[in-house]
Length: 311
Length: 234
Image (cartoon, rainbow over all chains, first blue to last red; front, side):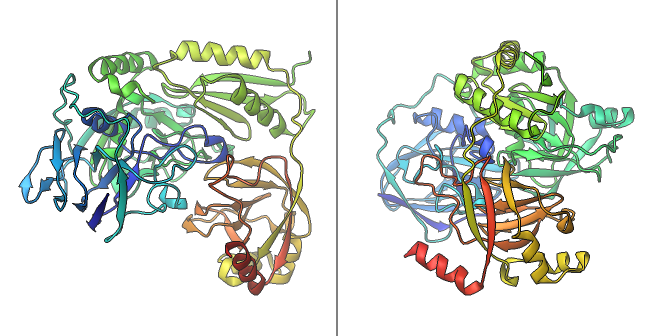
């Protein structure tokens, strides 16, 4: 009744929709770094919207199934193969006892999601099964999956054994050059006029020093004009904060809850999931958008993909 | 009613609002107003997915599929208008926390003794001589800001934050000392560690510390630290 990890991949963890309602205790949201791909996986497979999945990073795992079930993979394309036969992403496949799923490296995007018709057995902590690695919270003993780990599964009472084909998703257009829409943040004015222009015109590069907490960006040096001491303020995933050295950090799903650097821009919800697909070396540009425009975009996205509205 | 704070609400992206709070009259400690507002917003409305308090501000996150930005703004504005501030009757229970200041748990002790020209014993004595209050919780899971640290121990943050601290690590920064119940990343100078279990995932509220509590540290040896851990796990 389980799945065995034959090789773990680079950073493979159990994730779900995240831990809500605990930020006042310093608990990050965590959950899938790309919530769109996560929700798509559960939706297309016919699972409850908050089911736990396996998140793969850059290079995926090799898994052996000790029970028959159905699986579906979304997000970046890590050339998944079942028993050496190439399979497609965004499509349901049945696996039998002894079958092996082998994921390799992706060229575009960063994270891939494997959803299972069975439920992954792990204790929810503060309402979520997602793994928060810095404090070893949730998921599989709070850790990345290791060779030899056995993930217990059990039949899911909510699994609807019929593919959801009312929504056509054939994978998103992942790239190495991203254009993210951005709303000016609480301390956008801390930038001098020139840096404000730079922020919305320059290309930034994702550095190697990037993880689920945040992606450090290299590029134009932004000049924070105020030297005032800033008190620590609330932070959320999707915030671009900028320390005094001028190199901004784009916060991801494991973002800390408080921070003392200027919050320059916020990536709106309809684009925020793409932060989870940024890989070291990728280029990003930020394009300014108003709150109202972002809301319109979100509504349009929800018309095409109603499953995103479940938060 | 006399106005004690001036607050302004701004949009923080398309699913959060930020309230900046300025005290007009200091009738209470600055954080008391925000903590009372936090408690009020958390119970009075289920539209807020998260309410995040900070020292001079507070943020709420909402679901834009349920509430438009305008509706969220109006709701929060009305709630803050109607909020009748009373200092919370906080759980000011005194908690004695054993701390081992041994090198093994205090990677930054030598920096502190060097920069402050104090002996290790003096640092320990100063740090454990006063009682602290938990003024705020946040940053990483359960991280507790304690005030106020005696001035003799004021230290800057680390230039390069550490990525993985031991659960129970005790750090200092400026006029604060702090506890990392779950470990995780941290930028404060670490001078000790407590074996006391401050997080229990089995409980409804897994965190033992909450704002308002009074904390007193007492120094223990590394043997006592191990004894304490053995007793807890047995």
